[in-house]
Length: 225
Image (cartoon, rainbow, N blue to C red; front, side, top):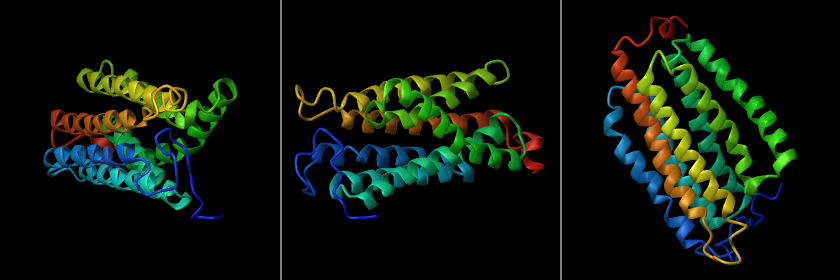
């Protein structure tokens, strides 16, 4: 594989130059801001603090991709996002559902084939949606957790539902980046950055508030694994 092959995937980019996507690049500062705002609320919560740290890394990785725009930078962009998803799934399974630690790990591992299956199915029907199809399994999974918590933890379920709404709006802008390019050369990918930063910061807040509401003991089964 040619790790330095140029990638031109977004409307704003018109050449291989470092600053060919200035708005897409600079709006990654929203991830750093969201991480900085989330950091104080995660004090004493190692899991949530790890999420805040990865959130900041997401901003750095995405900045690299929207400046260098090469294959290696694409990995620097997507791997931190995947890490955030897997960590959140583990914490959501153990904290929200009270499952043992081993079950949280298993559900996180199962996300990979689940994501591939859902994305593949949707792509056969609707196409790649400008690359947004790979995030649809996240929408389904957050919605599923919200549904399961609708009676036992209503505030957490409500917070997750709000996260789904924000994510759907941000994915809409990510998907429209290509189709609107002719009429709006700047594209709409930068709005995905801004809204996704809000969404990820919000999801950390939901995690922390659930833990605080449950008390320091969390769920007994969560410590059994």
